[in-house]
Length: 372
Image (cartoon, rainbow, N blue to C red; front, side, top):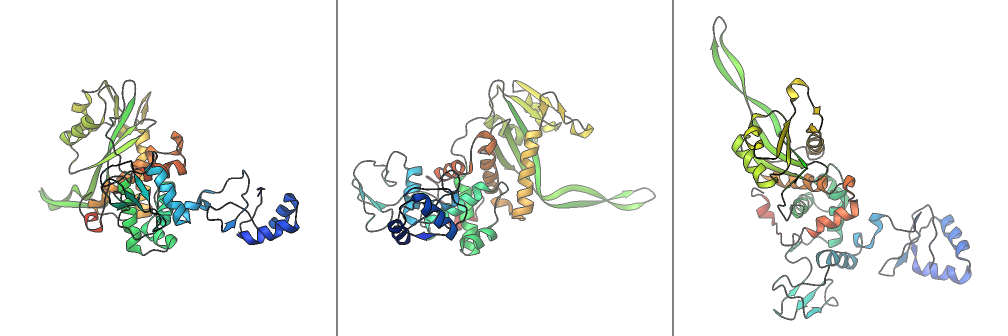
C-alpha cells in the first residue's frame, strides 16, 4: 500500500481499504477519494487498520504503536532496556531465554534459574497494574513538557485515578535520576553554582527594646523554605541538591564532590563560595547587589535561567511540594535541562533516555513517602 500526503485524521478499516483497491486501481485516485472522506493512512503492526500520514510520510509521535498497543509497547521497551537482547533480572543470564509470549505479552523464562520475567521486572514498572502503553504516554508527557505536567492533568489525560497518576509521576522521576556522578566541567570549562529557596515566604519576627520606642518587632530569618543548591555546566548539564543550611561546609561538600578542580567556578558574591573557590583553577564572581550581572565571561545567567524554569514549574504547575519529595522533582527538572533541545536531544530521544533509566530502580507506594 503506497502512502500519500493527506490533511485529515479519521481511521479507515483495513477491510474497507482492500475493498476499495479492487475497484480503484490508481493509487492517486484512491488517495484523493480517501482524502475526500477525511482519512490518513498509517501501517499498524497488529494489521487492524491503516492510516495515511501527512507531509513527510512519517507518523506523528503520539500515533506510534507503542502508545496504543500493549504488544508494541513491550517490544519498544525491550529494545530500550535490552538493546543486546533479553537479560534475566534474577541471575543476569543472557543465554537460553525462552519466549512465552503466547502465554502472556512480554513473558519470558530463564533457562538457567528457571524463573519467569518480563522487561518490567527489576525496574520502576515492576508490579504495576497500569498498562505499559499508558506508562509510555505518561513518560512522554513528562519528558516533553518543559515545566512538567501535574498529577491532575495526567489523571484526566490517561484515565487513571489521581492517586495512580501521582504515583506514576514519582516513579518516572525516580527513573530520571542520573546513574553516574561524572564530575562537571574540566579544563577550560565554566561551571556555575548558585542557591535558591522554595516555599512559603514566612518570616520569624523577634521583639527587641528600642529607646523611646519601647518593644518593637524586627524581621528575623526566613522559615519553612527549602534550600536548593544547583550546579550548571555552561552549555551542558545541571545537577541539584537540597541542603539543611546554606553555609561554607555544605557548599564545599557539593562542589568538591561534583566539579572537576580544573574548572572555572562562576558564582555570585555569596561569602560561602570564597573558601571553596580557591581550590579550582579560577573563581570568578559577579556582584548582583550592585547590579553587576555580566563581566566578560563572568556571569551566572545559565543557572538563573534554570531557576526560572524550575520555579515556574513548581509554582505554576505543581504549586505544592513537600520537602521530602523535592529531590525527585529536582531530578525531573535536571533531566529535562540536561537533555534539552539546545543540546540536540528531541522529545523522542529524551523519552528513550528516561526509560533507559528505569533499570535497577524500585519505588513502592510506601517508600515514596520516605525522604528521596
